[in-house]
Amino acid sequence: MPIKFPFRNAKLNKTEQPIGLEGDHLPKHVAIIMDGNGRWAKNRGMPRIAGHKEGMNVVKKVVRHASDLGVNVLTLYAFSTENWKRPKKEVEFLMKLPVDFLNTYLPELLEKNVQVQTIGEVDALPEHTRHAVNEAIERTKHNDGLILNFALNYGSRYEMVEAVKQISVKVKSGQLTADQIDETLFENHMFTSDLIEPDLLIRTSGEQRLSNFLLWQLAYAEFWFTDVFWPDFDETLFERALYDYQNRKRRYGGV
Image (cartoon, rainbow, N blue to C red):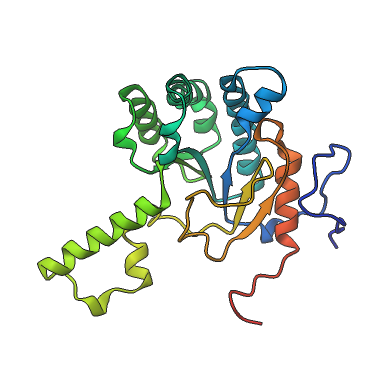
């Protein structure tokens, strides 16, 4: 019998570790809003980009641990359509992070049988960013382990509007009728059409909102929030979120 622990969404306490994870009851798809890099750096008198750099190291640890635990899909909110509003130097640094991450970490992703995917308007990203992402996708496309799905230049409202546009064109051309439009058809026109829906959303830094992330796909996901900034997030907190998920009842509108 797994031993339950008496708290949820607690602040970081490295002396308390979750135990009793049930391997056959893990969330298949975990989505993470990696928030708090800038505030983490500010609290230390460092530039915001230092927080983003440290956050990249946390991504490596969490991806490695999710793969080892047997999670099927890990979707990371890496850059939103709204993030273009940030200072130019910060945006330029953020556009270099995927290059640095994939250049240094791709050999381990290959070794761990991880498949890299993306959602979002990747074509609008700088050429060096697109090149690194596309190379990682190409080199890992035959892997059948964890799917590491980066949301890059992603916005959920944009995604849904684009799906409506595609469906409208098909209706106008006679390929579809209005009566054929249902949830399944709509989902098939989303960026995530080839992925299972997230079971669990994790958001760090104390914020408790979706921030235009997977609005449709998270309809029945469990939410888990922590005050910990992303650069301080670790494998212990990741397991804690999974443990809490395992101790919730998912009714999907039933009783």
